[in-house]
Length: 368
Image (cartoon, rainbow, N blue to C red; front, top):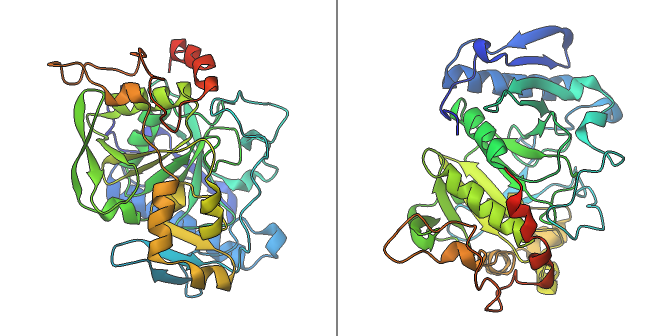
């Protein structure tokens, strides 16, 4: 892994082009967290204000999700919330045939290299240890404050890797934003690597951290008060373990969501198929935004019906145990049990155990 706390500044080549002055390349004013954060916030605010003067079909951002028109209320006594976003009306439809978490990249399908308006590309950042480039893109229908997309320049599928984790850690170490990631089969709608950047510490990341399960031979943390499955790792010194856990979930064809905030990675393993009961409680897919603690609906009756009891059940229904191999350490050797020990992985009826998992084990041989 490369040094993850490197700041982003002029030396990194972070340049930006945005709607008002497409011929005016902008660079971060200084290589420090406060200046980087101010730059990103101001750039997003410029996009919102400029878009507001345009016809809807020409806007890069339809509205600020957290403006005076936002309708929200707490869910229960904790930090979780529900939102009514009648302006958006509906989320984009997800592709119907999402079966394999590790679905190959399809150049003939839509991907972010095919965006028609170059103004959607706000900035280009060389974040990876190998100099891999990522683009900061506008998000037309934001769900959070400062909601943008970080997209790989390379035409690669929606699969988290050690390199992508390293790039995210570098970016978040240089600003005050947070991020979330939806795997394929877990609310992602475009099979081209991307994650969501948001200008807030999401609700789940405000919960106190307490000892959780032993994962890969080492005791990890969990958010106290989160009802579902969640394993928390330090960005500073446990990112390799996150990569191993993600690799194990991919090999087992287990969908997953990640939240990166406040110096930690929150890992949410999921069942392959959304339980039917989930649709009765909530009309949308439970993905990164919801597991981060923010439920958005688009009709008033759904908003009124959504309660803490429903959210509690949704968290439990839409998360699942990690692959068994991740939860079994070697006696007397904490931290050495890795995700490449597969003996007995199908010995019990874990939610993610299914025949396709064995066929996907060869993914472990592929380097991250």
